Image (cartoon, rainbow over all chains, first blue to last red; front, side, top):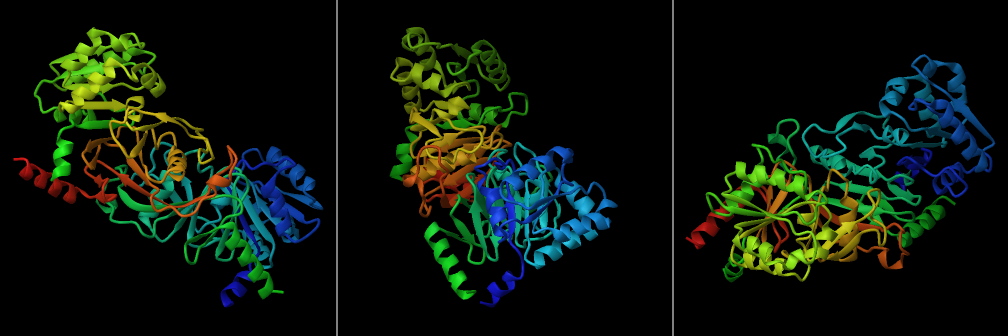
Length: 286
Length: 286
């Protein structure tokens, strides 16, 4: 129970694969709102990753208002100076939900890394607020962040570009637009270079809720997990950059809404197990 | 040894993922030529799948001549009448290598299915000739043939279109342009509907040589194997068409040139094992 107790100290974290539905049927964004536990939460939308922040903010403002937000805040941080500005830090501190838009994840880490704004996001998370992000705003959540890799064949030495992300969640590497842009080979390369990390490939209009050790799939799309912990030998150390990597026994799982994954035991949880777990959880904390 | 003896009665079969190099460095096409065991083989090029047979034939004529072919035959079968024509059947019967070009695999099965030309190809294979094909010409080689599926997310009930192929190789389903068009979800869907079949996902400029129970990877690209034989439960029977499929424990292997796979034991063979096997084989038949 200790582990669960520790987890309880962090608010819910949601990562979305991009292109999520923002209209009335939007399963994922509605779920994000519900996770705040408030009837009419305040949502801070951070559009730093985007090159068209005005349009992106407007779309999320409409969506979150539709789903019951009391206020939607335009946290338009464009540069490192903005990321220190009291005005924006105050907005983040008022938010029950901090939402990171899509765009370029490198912009996000470059502008927000080691800033007062990022400190404020971490404080909000520690106080139980919801942190959610889509596309770049999802990729940045892992400790190691993928930001590039050939759309053709990324299972080549050095083909996947990685740098440090925000580390809102440990032990995983998140990739987005995963099925739509055929990024399976990216997470296979990542897993071969370090089998310790679980690859989380988020399809469009799909998301995961990180709930302690449990990952819950959300939305109409797919979440593909790439588990390299049992891989056999590989040629990866013998290769020059760009040469094709051989690897065996990469395990993949495809989760859909209602399914989950136990990151501790690396096991897929079906809808029944997931419901039983939720019940157990609610009894433990009632 | 009996099994190998039976296999010996069939000529080599090569499936290529498309877009293979045809210039001087062309590893795969050179290998196809060498498999004929002849210094200067006769190559019959069947362009039935293509909508631009003239251009396609010209490219292969140049390539095969460069790699030492004595004659390259333009087996330009365009319709079912052509597929019965003595002229074309005679060309196939003279070929040491029968090469099936890319294009539309449905055209290939529709025009050649149950024809004198296809009988002639099978006879050539039984007599030890090389049968090789790229893209559509590779996809058609399996007993069940994939011919369509959403480029976005094919892991949805009914999303992958399949029909009967020529069955030059049993127990596998071949897909092509696999990494470049992100087709992983197609073979995951196929494997979930029937875990018995091994998915063979051929990248561009990559191929496999089916040598009895052993599959040998060729070329600079990747061969991805999708082994669904150990999958856990799935929701697939409960779904309506188009709904997302959940599946766990799909095993994937990435082979590169020099690596192989034992289809009997479903095990990846590294370069050392593959060489040892070749030696054993040559001793047994010397």
